[in-house]
Amino acid sequence: MTSKPILVTGATGYIGGRLVPILLERGYSVRCLARDPKKLEGRPWGDRVQIARGDVLDAESLREALEGCGAAYYLVHAMMAGERSFVGRDRAAARNFADAAEDAGLDRIIYLGGLGRRADALSPHLASRQEVGDILRGGPVPVTELRAAMIIGSGSASFEMMRALVTRLPIMICPRWVKTKNQPIAVRDVLAYLVGCLEEPKTACRIFDIGGPDVLSYKEMMIRFAAIQGLTRRIVVVPVLTPRLSAYWINLVTPIPAALAFPLVEGLRSEVVCQNDRIRELVPIEPTPFGDAVQRALDKVNENDVSTRWANAALPSRAALVRRPRFDPAAFSFRDEQRVAVAAPASSLFDRVQRIGGSTGYYSGDLLWKIRGALDRIVGGVGLRRGRRDPVRVYIGDALDFWRVEDFVPGRRLLLHAEMRVPGDAWLEFRVDEDGPERSVLRQTAYFQPSSVWGRLYWYAILPLHRFVFSGMARGIARSAEAACPGTDRPGGGRSAGSAGPPMVLDRDVEEPAEAGGESR
Figure (cartoon, rainbow, N blue to C red):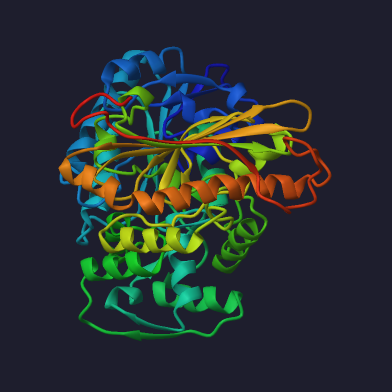
């Protein structure tokens, strides 16, 4: 075992976020590369790793991150469709990493790529992933490349897409690609191979296909998936659905947006089956059958034990590729602030705040929120379909319906940035303060900065709804906290009896520009 740190790129992603704690458990020193180190705050293992701020597209930051490391995992790639430059970005990132690894004198790179034969017509994303492996191997640092097909695990995009299709559609009209052969692999097996390759020097300078023991068509996988859940599904195959039409249909029926569904569907059109099992000679694990992988993933979902999820790893928008959202309260022209006194301890109040969204909803006006989510999906937004990774706990970077968690201070503050389609920049902030024994104050503020005259018209047009929704949400959070702590003193005297009686509204402020184009007051 090397005493040098192991660098993990993509530590905030689906695979990287699960690999890091395994490496720590096995006694390795781990360094995580992250564009935004705050996204690693709150992780159970966050205080046990070194964190290097950097980006694979920033060559200088890579050199600093790799300094002194013994090996590195390369677990990043572009996946969102509609980004014409994704091949160029993947290529540039791989070249940067290969050069930086050479400069740092790295012992090994371990890369997780995509399965598929180049003799076949691979999708652009699968072809790009294999090109990344070529570029990494072009340097002097020994590379181990693992090529996987569909990964089955709680929170993976492939798993959630299949689960939604099977659960919601008793009869499915599917394109011909559902008959293409695939060799899915359980996420636990992927992680076992990644760690095993690090610990087995003979895996260096080699390419391995990795997969589970079952070779199945997507149709066969859906039928088995349905049977595991006690469902019977009928699948009708037709020749007229193109990958793009399929992606739009998946966008409509499942939590997966079209931008992500399209590359997934394109990949499913190619036969992705292991050409050899040489990896099992060097890393002897027992592959998990497809049915067992599905059942394990379903159990994790039912137990609310999903440690990483596709929605938290995926880039939310094209703009996020070039700039991080910046929260500056003074820069927002419009805001709605609610202040409510709550007859409950601050800890109980914040517990209700951090449960917002997902299956909990928004404590008031849930029908209006659902309509807003439906409208967002119609115009190509994410809507409410992403839900939450966990019904109680949140990490910075978590997707929360059509919001993303940008800051989280346990017991004190939750800051959400809107990823819905809106003509401007919208944020929602919750702050909780103590107000004496068994009492607290909730400060809830919605911020909006219009991007054009349409943004201003948007704000004024829905202002009456906002007043109802935001006021109701703040009161609903307060009532829920008080109901969880019956018998506590109400502000202003008296006792709380469950959720009886409205919380005390201390203040409400709707702030608008003092004049057109002027500063907010």
